[in-house]
Figure 1 (cartoon, rainbow, N blue to C red):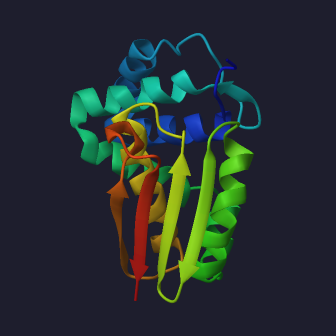
Figure 2 (cartoon, rainbow, N blue to C red):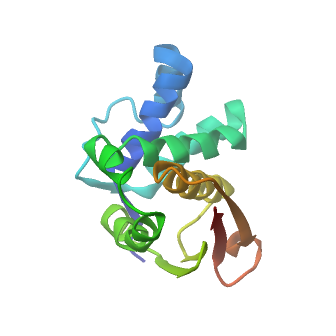
Length: 174
């Protein structure tokens, strides 16, 4: 079975959150615990998914799952020029692009987005290996809503890690 891979930009997004939130010392401890001290992560390169998990597990272990969600939101909301341009895009357009954006960043899993009115359902299969991944997805989806300057909420309605066929997130906005 092939190893799951993720773009360096995703890992770097989480690492930047760690440094912004807990400073250089927090970053040093995170990289050491995640065994990433000897690696320079480049945005466009694919890396083993376990590297992202090392960072989010460190966040969870030391500060709790709420910070994993905040890190997922931070990663989506701080994409440089793209994050700025998104502010002028509708939430429907962003959610429609979420599927292709996933496949640009990850080389595994299946993502679907079903949009109707002011509600969307994100269906994700084989994308989370640990609970921290699920929490990161919650934050990422919340970040997409916030980027489009909408008020809304994201609710997880199914979880593959808890026995469902797939994970499902309901996104509702005003």
